[in-house]
Amino acid sequence: MLQPDNYPSQALREAVEAINSLPGVGKRSALRLALHLLKQPSDKIHRFASAIDKLAEGVHYCNTCMMVSDGERCSICADPKRDHNTICVVESVRDVMSIESTGQYKGVYHVLGGIISPIAGIGPSDLTIKELTARVTPDTEVILALSGDVEGETTSFYIYRQIAPSGCKVTTLARGLGFGDDLEYADALTLGRSIANRQEFKP
Amino acid sequence: MLQPDNYPSQALREAVEAINSLPGVGKRSALRLALHLLKQPSDKIHRFASAIDKLAEGVHYCNTCMMVSDGERCSICADPKRDHNTICVVESVRDVMSIESTGQYKGVYHVLGGIISPIAGIGPSDLTIKELTARVTPDTEVILALSGDVEGETTSFYIYRQIAPSGCKVTTLARGLGFGDDLEYADALTLGRSIANRQEFKP
Image 1 (tube, rainbow over the protein chains, first blue to last red):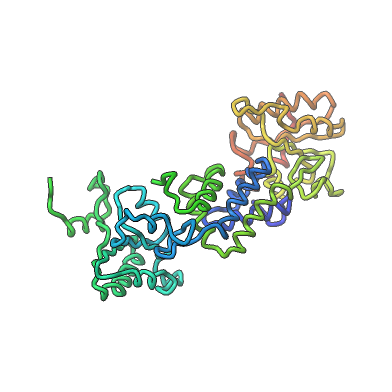
Image 2 (cartoon, rainbow over the protein chains, first blue to last red):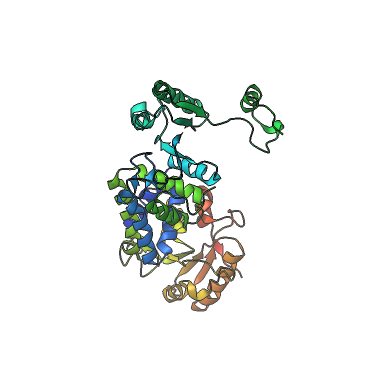
């Protein structure tokens, strides 16, 4: 329905094209969002644009764990109360935020910045695996908290091969049925692994 | 899962909050989009932000039909080949773009900028009805192309009462469209036929 040449305004077209370039935002949604912004007072539009603009320079990466940060060292790596000998390896910042929100983890993190994926053209050198290897000592426990799909497992194996020679302990997330899940609705792979990896019952 | 105090960076938090302020974009999606932008080269982020920023000043409204425009007069109102005695009254710019994309309408438009909605606190004075009344002459045909729901019909009735005394012809879209359907989501064929088969407005 939307044809490239019937935008009534060049500025509107540019905004729609910019929003449309975001992943998962179609042209129609982009137009809806652009017209919503257009209706806002101009200072609100400026604030919106400047919040986005600051992503280009206002965001740093922690020198240690490679997480998004306000400075050269993130608040988690700078916290002396955290256990710096336990490093949880995750794919992205979102995973850090998910784990932090559980309130159950007291170690530190290492953000890979992606996952090994030949299809997407992402190899080990595109990730922060070298930086991880440099952090690992024989006293370190490395928790591999990557996704359970083929690419996640491949990445876990690759990292294991890189860090195991240092003599560190390598663990991975417990996988199985979610708490409160019904057996009936579990997928066969998860249920099968839950049985194979069954644990001692501790009442 | 996302708690307000566990954003690893202030700039990231501000960007997420800005994107989250858009209608229909939740906090989780906003984070996903902000992290996507963050991964882009900084000149791409700047271009994105500046495209949004230009919405504040780079977009004008046509003096005649109130449509979004690059200047004081939109390209449709400035086109001598269009029939300036046929005015299609629509709720928003998106409706103009939908009708234009059918390629079946040769008249001009009038963008109300909304629809009468007591619940949303939008009354006739919030819309460009006065400006429409000023455009109407006894030779004008006004096509009321508002949505078929209660608010659309209410607005149509209100406009009819305002413009009928001028002696103009008032028509409305043929309801090949389902009742309650939005113009925006109609397919081009149905919408085009609805314009071609427009009928006299009989209150």
